[in-house]
Amino acid sequence: MAVVFDKDNKLGPGQHHVVTHAQITYFENYVEDAQGQVTNKGTFYSEPLETMTFHSEVPGCSNPLGMKSKEIHDYQISASSSYAEAQPSQARELDDGWCAKNTKGEQYLQIEFLQKTRVTGLVTIRRQSKPHWVIEYFVMYSTDSNNWRTYTENGFKKLFQGNTISFTPTKHWLANAFEAMTIRIIPTKWEILICLRLELYGCLIKGSANNCISPLGMESGEITDEALSDRRASVDPSHGIQPKNARLNAKITKFPNGWESTIETEYLQVDFGSLRRVTKVATQGAYTTESYTLFFVSTYKLSYSKNKIDWTEYAESGSVKTFKGPVTEYDAKYPVVETIQSPFVARYVRLYPMDAGSGGVKVMRAELYGCFQEPLPPYTGSPDLEFYRRSFIVDSTTDQFYVCMYTDNRDESSCFSTKDSKAWTAIDANIIGMLASNPRDREIYAIDRQMNIYRSKDSGASWSQISREYY
Image (cartoon, rainbow, N blue to C red; front, side, top):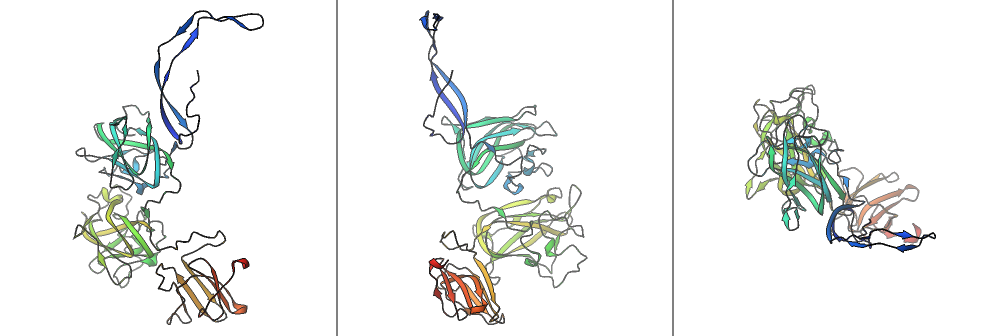
């Protein structure tokens, strides 16, 4: 028997729960002659009309979203609470599992996607090393991490069945796939401890905006050593206390195994090089090969600036915010992420350690999260031209150096020139980027706010547009 549905191909990719009515009719027997023609069908029978339900997959949106493969990064996974040895990042199939440290209140495991995602299914697995698992749970989701919805089917909150003592994964395809930036698993019933491993299924929504939660470069080294500083006049290179050792997860083998805050340092300063929107901060204690570390910062504050002159202390609800780092020496081995409820835009950020951990020494490694925030021109333009918001050239004939950093303020210059790096000359505010120089003819080329190409023969004092037919 074949069931045909969605013949017009209106359903989107994913798992679909199909409910249809069917009735079976048939004849008792068929009698055919020598030529194969039916001469008698026998008695006609008809079964009662019945409701049939089944799942069918429309290919394209049912792939694993990255828990097992780690395409979902550790920093995208968080929880209401956790044991030091059962971090949220261990909620992967090949790890031991996440376990909530508390069983009171609404505990959850949270996944933040890097862009809006269509979720079509999920799988949970019990803890690997011990008989702990989640028996039942709800699913909640959000597009902005503030307004949450509980997943429903047929108008009611769906209570998902979780796991048993078996290691067999429990998979659910969603009858109502949803779009989200963030998803939470809310356990309601469990065995001994709230522990689980997880995989999500679905697909990214093409063209959707990026979630502003990416690492800003401490751990990766994108923020250079020179961009990290404190108030020390100098540091003995044989010590491990330098600002460059304040990188999250860095293996610092020199004592005290990370950047150390003292009375003379006051703060750790990070220079992004350009404006960033900061949405989260993570800290951890000194590097160790043991299961714990005694040196860490348990509380700290933040301040930020766009120009390194005017500083603002980060505050919430009118009061300066005190952020919490690790609580115990076991927690201090792992990153502790704090969400910035009122994200700010800054080029410079300072972290002010307040209280030391159990070892009495304020050692910190850190990462900041967010996204690029510098203005970009609204022009999406010509495929023949690529725009970089920073540019520079040197005219070898005149020894003139030109540098540009795009600004969206039409009354301000984006580009400046100098011969000695002391005296700078502002260039026409309509020019936003340098392209090339032609020393032979003493010419320089640039682009304007409409992505037109201009040429100057007098070191940027005046400009003439080049017709598009020439490029």
